[in-house]
Length: 248
Image: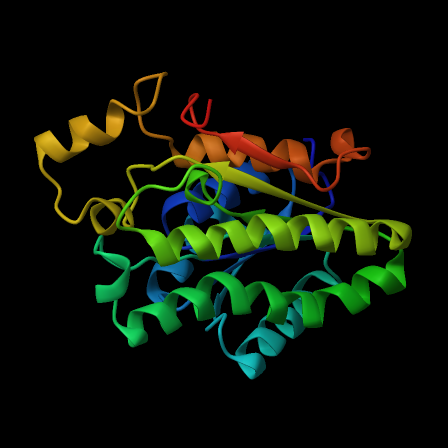
């Protein structure tokens, strides 16, 4: 029970990596608010996880929606100890100049502005209690970019830089900030990364991962559990590659 008594928010928690993190956190003793635009999926997972989980319909790119999410977590659990900025999106593979302005805006609203908005409402209570852990779910795309995903790559590079900047600023307040950089996983976003889901395209992606498999929600849950637990009390500003060797 490495997270016994901890209170966490997981954005994009209804599916994929977010659901894996939520499941792991509840198994390790945490209370978890599962925040997602897909409220039906979030509620189904909360029902599965029992009384330790609460669902929230949240648009992470909207100021008031994020504020409501944080207030709901504080009301439900009496405070917050951990924030997981997991929600993310991408544009379809395309030459950089062909990505539409609407797709560009969507990527940066969801992947970047969300980190600003959650910090706006979570950092003040963290400072007040003198402790807290923030984990940003970035991507190997921000470390070793793939072609034709340029603006997604850039948004995840932004997350890695934001993580380090947040860590150095918030360390004196007892707040740790880290990131994980997953390689592609068999989640709802995989088809968007690949453009099309065929055995040939999957084999091409897998050939870039030395361990030879996609990452799983369980992989991300395990890494997140360590970085957000008291075991990692001396770890901040780290952008951990959870990628089967992809970035070597």
